[in-house]
Length: 201
Ligand code: ADP
Ligand code: MG
Image (cartoon, rainbow, N blue to C red; front, top):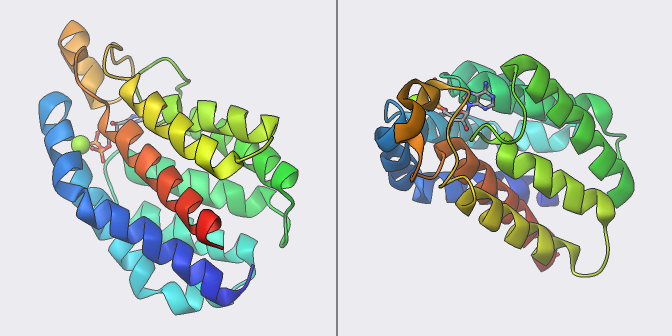
């Protein structure tokens, strides 16, 4: 993975977060405090501002730098969790991973998010996207990037009927039902952006 490709990944993730910031905000207004769009935009703009430096690092170190920036800049509940995901990936990935190694590393990083959030799939959070995406990634097969993008989108949609058990939305109890989880939506946007960049390669 060369520097230009890493810069494209950072740009694609930032662009999708910036262009969907209002949507993420309104999802968070429905079942949270309405800051998720702004939180994520601030975090990814900070990553983009440091893109040349991050992309010049070996992949594991670059991911650790992304994670640090997200922890410091996103804030809220999602900043430490996305930061843990990126730093966990940085720790678990070899410098030039195969798809199988990347899937295994994503699994270990997701385990760290679960530990940090005291959470798991089924609780109406970003994990309801990350966990099925990782499972599909680990299964592999043809047209993987297209399939992962679809899994991510459908998994975010599937949080609509769920009742929130973790995070701010859990304060609403039954009233959290009927709305998509903002973190599940941002996770699906990020997965789709990464898949698009790999598709174009
Ligand atoms: P805050 O809830 O502090 O305002 P954000 O609005 O930025 O933070 O992020 C909210 C999102 O974070 C939720 O939609 C959910 O996906 C995710 N989230 C919150 N708490 C947890 C948790 N314990 N485990 C996993 N994800 C969580
Ligand atoms: Mg919020």
